[in-house]
Length: 361
Image: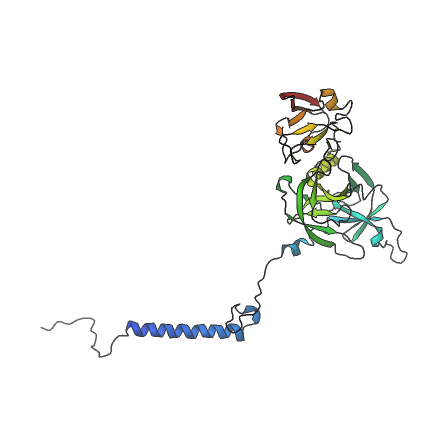
């Protein structure tokens, strides 16, 4: 009996395609598709969508879209940076004052939302000033000064201001790119410029004093307007420009932040009364800390806290409490963490012998 199958395939004389033929067809299809894509990119799509490699024109200009962060930050702080001008009479036609370049005294930055601005004593000496912030003109109602740093705080009548942020001192690096934003008369937008940080711990004098600022920040730009604010590329304030012995430097944010705290807490800085040499930040010294010394005047102010505690000429101060003096943390900067009435332990070397001295600030 003949056996039957459920799936019967009729015999044929056609051969299945060989691997060689399949390879040839694949190559041809790929070439046609590639050439079609080339034509589509170069002649059909807009030039901005075309590929950047053109075998017919190897000199074709290549354009790459790169994000420009400076464009974004150029206007970021316009509502936080004000211009300080000489007070002018209002024009009868418009009821507002009109300012010129000759009226411009310097810049100020907003430090509190309720109307406190900060500038320097090289810009503002009294309250007879006009403040131009964004599209408004204010009159200064109150003025207070920080004698330690030379900073001046101005009060205007506004409760909705945009304060600046401050850069962390430990993050300041040589070579860091900075920008400034300065108000200019007869223009809505600010003047904008960039520069670089060239020294983050610059002392214009070799003899320092604990009761005044001991170091500044130096930048490559030397043509600065008074109290020009400089920011890092995230928009945090690095410092305000200040003329020190015919050098234009920046008051560091480290001291600015302390001055703002004193303003907000209504506190004052104490005066320790020590004149010294910063051996950590002077070339040629292999000793540590700060040396109590000044050849031009008495190194310890009479009747000061340091004088009462027994600090003497030639003492080598190496630490305050647990804070060791280093090239990153100077004697004066460490002291700014304390307030009048605080008690600190100052570690000194006297004739090679280490000892602790307690001082009531």
